[in-house]
Amino acid sequence: MEKEEKKIREHFLVNFDPIEFYDFKLGSLSKDGTEDNYDFWFSCLYEFFTTEKIDGERLLDLGSGPTVHNVATASSYFSRIVLSELVENCCEEIRKWLRKDPDCVDWSPMLERVAKIEKRKDLKAATKEIEERIRSSVKAVIHCDVVNDQVIAKEYAQEPYDVIMSGLTLETAAVDLDSHSKIIGRINRLLRKGGKLILFGPTKTTFWKVGDNTFHSFPIDVSDVQKSLEENGFGDIRFKLKEQPDNDARYNSDKLYFVTSTKL
Image (tube, rainbow, N blue to C red; front, side, top):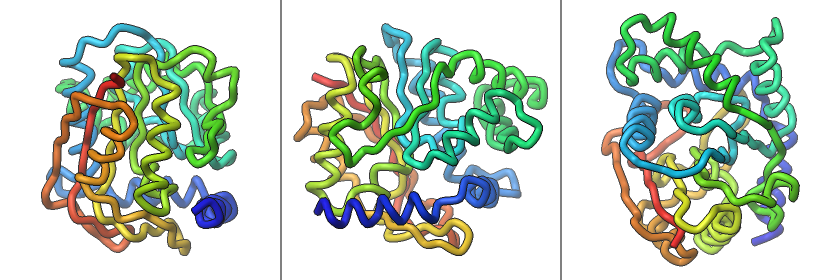
């Protein structure tokens, strides 16, 4: 298992390009105004953060890629957000965006969808507000490796997090059910008792393509996610599913899932 995990990790480190991933993300957005995969996940995140009463201010996003949109709604409620990613070039793209470097990528098309879900009237102005909200809340962009027992650097793991979230990440690192369960166990150690874990992604996905490169995905199902959470000390497990995801040539999937749970 460790040998296969290392092989997948090395493939990511060598071949994952943040600019190609940016094109992958924008190319996945629907053009006709219908709800697409990201609208589903953004809606779930909005509902969670606007209805749950969570004490604390620390949130960790595991596997951010070069993106910032996963924490868009959370940035209204958490003042100490840490973004993390395996590939250093992706971390640097986020830092460029936070600094407003002239050559940073433009995440406004994704954030405008968040503004729409937040029921904002002036979407362009709201998108700018969300951008500044994220910049104000994100305190660090760091390396992470979910198949390493030291998932993040010790200096960022000394104080437990109130919320940890991870989207479209764990399936790309796990090689089998045991591997997935061990990743959840490592995440558990970073979270305070009573803290919330948010996971989302596709089910039964076997591949995804960025540019000319095809990347691994372990074809996990909803019952597998449930089992991994229960095995590693999580309860109050709540799923939302999208039954007909927008499949395209970039990746295949059966359903989309969004799940929240509490560390017992």
